[in-house]
Image (cartoon, rainbow, N blue to C red):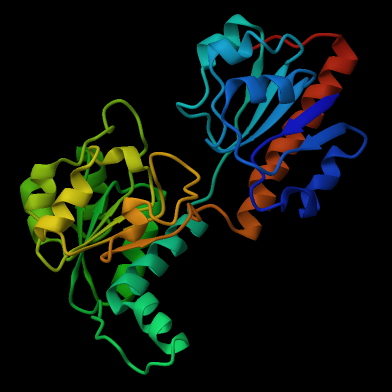
Length: 319
């Protein structure tokens, strides 16, 4: 089976222990961030299977129509809006999804919160430039952590906050708010109160039609002038352009971002990277050794299982 793995930005996939699962297959790995449909069609022309890293590669109906040999898309993590599942079904392409883990994403979120609040990047830049103690950060003790979305990552963040003696305030669905109360945390009485009371507000929602652009300019205008907004989930949760405008107006006072509408960002003068009160990381939430071994291990195992079934039966029906 011919397998193509696109978008290995870090050149790490072939170094993973689990890569041995693809031994015996014809595997090609690309290390850039190609998005041009013509380039992708050429690279995928002979592929019988694609292994996709999360949502880095968009596979739509037009591209699928140019890939007659494709039989399988093995997805690390869940299939998202980057993948046209209906078109896959129509063309007989099986999609194998993987699972995920909240651990690395929760740890990265907490690292961003600590870094932004203590202003570590500015302090470290000053030190490496020959200056000593150039700024003054803030502690987390006694502050309110607002968590929108009390799923696996949100629950883990709440436990971190409790260890730091923070107040935890949860917003989200009724089920999320009730689960938070059952765990001993507070549920915000209203959306308005949630944005008004949080000193640090972290978004942990899946991107679906109901959550796209759910954070509005009005929401951000309610935040405290020294509050921190953190987004390690999806950039599209925030309405286009409103975060930069809100920061320029002074509410909230800071932002920490791990996700962007267009990825990867390769321009140092990008408005989000250039803003003095935004701390940015290059979508590192899931980019961690143990997570990669788990995600790619599952994706590669799904490829082997599919190939074995094809060899045994001569065909595999799409789900």
